[in-house]
Length: 461
Ligand SMILES: Nc1nc2c(c(=O)[nH]1)N(C=O)[C@@H](CNc1ccc(C(=O)N[C@@H](CCC(=O)O)C(=O)O)cc1)CN2
Ligand SMILES: Nc1nc2c(ncn2[C@@H]2O[C@H](COP(=O)(O)OP(=O)(O)OP(=O)(O)O)[C@@H](O)[C@H]2O)c(=O)[nH]1
Ligand SMILES: [Mg+2]
Image (tube, rainbow, N blue to C red; front, side):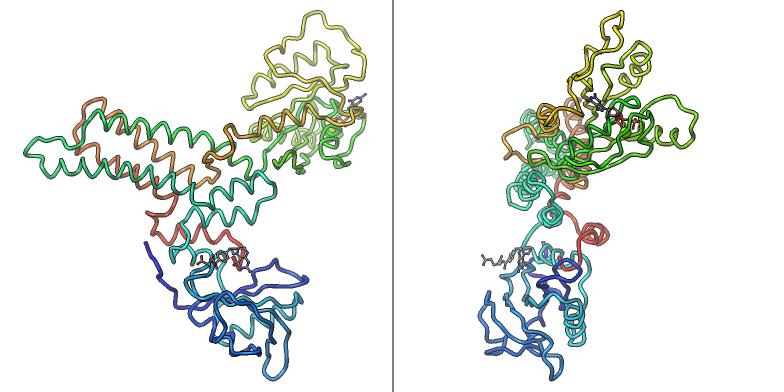
C-alpha cells in the first residue's frame, strides 16, 4: 500500500460543473497549495497562518487588480479529501473569473489536474481504496435514490470489508498449504483437507451469491432498460407516454407510426427506468420500417424487462400466430399487456388463448388514470432481493474480477475432490485471491488499469 506517498505536483481544477453559475469552486491540491494560493490571496491574515479546516473571506489578486472576492477553505495534510494540503477557492461563477483564476494558478506553478486525479490521489495516498474511489464517481452520476444507495454502500467500509475478509480467509489457508510444499519431503499436511474443502465451498457460495446481485445491481446503477414491443397499433407509444407522464412519442391510429426507437427515462419508487418504445412488429415492404423492426429485435435482446403489448380487442388467430414465435424467443422477464381493455373484443377466437404461461396484465393505456399495477410490476422486477443492506455488486470491473475468482476457486474445489496435491492447488488459490483483491485495489499496481478507471471521472474530482 502506498500510504502517504505524496505527489510532488500541485494540481488545480474547477470542481463545479462547467459553465456559468452562481459560484464556482476551484480546487488546489499538493505540497505547494498553501504557498501558491497565498501569493494571490489578500486576506485578514496570511493563508499559511490559517488553522486547518478554516474558511475565510478574501480577494484573489490579478497583479495589482482584484479579480474577485472569494471564500477560501484550507485543509492541512492528511486531513483533506486527497490527504494532501488542499485549498479550495469558492469564487463567483463567471466563466471569465474561472478561466482567469486557473490561469493565474498555473502561472504560479500549479498543473491542470487530469480527470479523476483528486480521487486518484486520495486512493494512492491510502485514504480510500479503489472500490471506494469508484464509488465517488457513482455518487456523482447517481440519478435516483436506489443508485445513490448502492454507490453510498460501496463508498462506505462494509463493501470493501466483505472482499478483504474473503481474501484474508483464503490467504491464511494458502499460506498453510504452501508451508506443506516447504516440507514436501516429510509428507505432512498442515492444511486439513476437509476444512479446506468446506472453507473453499463456503467462499465459492458467497462469491456466487455476490455475482448474482450484479445484473440487478448494474441495472439499478445504469437505469433499468425496459423495451415496449408488440404488433403495430397495439398502443405501445400511448403506453410510453402514459408511463412518462408526457407526450413524448407520436400516437396515431395508422399502423407503423413509430419507426425508430424512442428512449426516455422515468424514476419510479427511487429506481431509474430507461423506457424504449419500438417500431411495431409486422410484415412490411417499407425499407425504413424494416430497419426500425430490426432495431426492435435488438432492443428485445438488450432489455432488462420487456413489456409486450397487444391490442386485446383486435386479437385474432392471425395475430396470435404472428406473435407466438416472438414471445417464445424472449428470454428476459416479460409482461404480456392486453391493451385497450376499454374496448370490446372484435373477434372471438375459437381456441382459448395459448399464452397461459406468460405473466399477463389487462389495462387501458389510453383511458386508465394511472398505471399503478404496471408500475408496481416494473418496480418489483427491478428491486434487489434482501433487506437493502446486503452487499450488491454493480460495478462491471468488480463483476469480471469476481467471476475469474470464482472460476479459479471452482478449480480448487474440483481438485480437492480429486485428491490433488498442494502444489497443484495453491496456484489457483493465489489466482483467486489476486482477483478478489482487484476489487478493493489491494493488488492493483498497474498504471494502465488505474488510468482506465480514473480517466472516466470528471475533471476536478
Ligand atoms: N468543499 C468540498 N465539499 C465536498 C468535498 C470536497 O472535497 N470539498 N468532497 C469531496 O469529495 C465531498 C466530501 N468529502 C470529503 C472527504 C474528506 C474530507 C476531509 O477533509 N477529510 C479529513 C478530515 C475529516 C474530519 O474532519 O472528520 C480526513 O479524512 O482526515 C473532506 C471532504 C463532498 N463535498
Ligand atoms: N381505445 C383505446 N385506444 C387506444 C389505447 N391505447 C392506444 N390506443 C389507440 O390506438 C392507436 C395506436 O396507438 P399507438 O400508441 O400509436 O400504437 P403503437 O403500438 O405505438 O403503434 P405503432 O407505432 O404503429 O407500432 C391510437 O389511435 C391510440 O389512441 C387504449 O388503451 N384504448
Ligand atoms: Mg408507436
